[in-house]
Amino acid sequence: MMLRVSEPILGDEERSALLDVIDSGWITMGPRVEAFEAEFARTHAASQAVAVNSCTSGLHLSLVAFGIGPGDEVLVPSLTFVASANSILYTGATPVFVDIASLETPLMCIEDAAAKVTPRTRAVLLVHFAGYVLGRDLWTAFAREHNLILIEDAAHAAGARSAGTFGSAAIFSFYGNKNMTTAEGGMILVADDALAEQMRRLRAHGLTSTGYERMAVRSSSYDVPMLGFNYRMDELRAALGMVQLRSLFEWNEKRRQLTGTYHQILRAQQDTVVMPFALEYGGGTADSSYHILPVVLPPDAPRSAVMRRMLEDEIQTTIHYPPCHHLSYYERTQPGVLLPKTEEFGRRELTLPLYPGMETDDVARVCLSLQAAVRHAQHEA
Ligand SMILES: *Cc1c(COP(=O)(O)O)cnc(C)c1O
Image: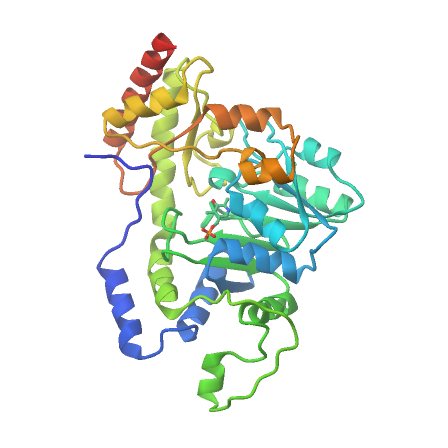
C-alpha cells in the first residue's frame, strides 16, 4: 500500500548469483569483478571500467589519480549529494560551489562556473542530477578553454546514453536506491588505459599485484610504489551487478514511460508545480536514466505540510537535495556562500516516487494526492 520513493528489484537471479559465489570458494575481488567491469564498460561504450566499493570512493580515487590535492580548487554544484563535495575535501583540495542554471534546469550553471574559475581551479565535477546528461559539448569546450579536468559524477545516470562518454572519468553508484544496485558499490569509466591501470593499483593499497593474481601464480611477493586505499569491490557485489545490468535498459525504459505520465498529468495541472526537465523531456527523448522525479512546489505551499499530507495518503516523498553549502559542516568551514537559485530549489523541491515496479495507476494516485496536498498547504499557509 505504501508507495515508496524508490525500491530495488531483487529476485531469484540475484539470489542464485550470490549462492554461486559462495559455492565457488572465492569471495573477494577476482574474475567476477573483472567480468562485471568489462560488461559495464561495453554497456556504456567505454574502453575501461574500474569497479570500486562505492561511488564516493570512486570519486576520491579519480581525483587522486588526476593529481588533485591541497591548494587546488574543484568546481562542483551545491545541488548534489554531499559525497560529491566530500570527495574533493578528502584530497585536500577545495570544493567551489556553483549555482544551478534555473528551477527548470537544475544543473550546474556554466556562466556561474566560468565566473568562479581562478588560477587554482584544476577540475570541474559535473553532476548528472536526476539522471539528465545535458550540455556535453558546452562542458567539453569549457574544460578545454580553462584547461580543466572534466569529471562526471554519474551516480544518477547508469544507462544514460552519453554518461561517461566525455569526462576524463565518470563515476557511477550502485547504492540501494540507484537505477541498478549491488547494495553498496560503484564503477569508474575511464578512457585512458594507463590511468585505468593506475586506478586499479590505487584501489588496492597501491600494490603491484592483487590477492587473486598472487593466489593464481602461487606468489606472495609484491611492491607498494604508491599510497593507495582499500576501495575494492568483491565477488558477491560483482555477481549482483552482472544480473542487475542485464535489466538496466529495460528498467530505465519503464522509468522513462512513468516520467512521461507524470509530465502529462502534472502539465495539465499547471498551477500545482514546476516540472524540471520538462523541455528536455519533450517527447521522452531526453538523454537520461530518469533516476528521480523532482518537482518544484509553489512558494506558498510549505513543503513539510505537503509531505505530511501525502504520507497520510501512504505516499513517501523526499528532498534532493538540501544544498551542500547549507549543511552545517560546510557552513562552518566555508561560510558566506550565496547561491540564490540552488537555495530556492532546495527550499521548494519535492521528489515523487519513481521506480520500475510502479504502474501508471500509481503515478495517477501520486499526482492526485500531490494536487490535494498543495491546495491544502496553500490554504493553511
Ligand atoms: C549516491 C550518490 C553518490 C554516492 O554514491 P555512493 O555509492 O553511495 O558512495 C555520489 N553522488 C551523487 C550525486 C549521488 O546521488
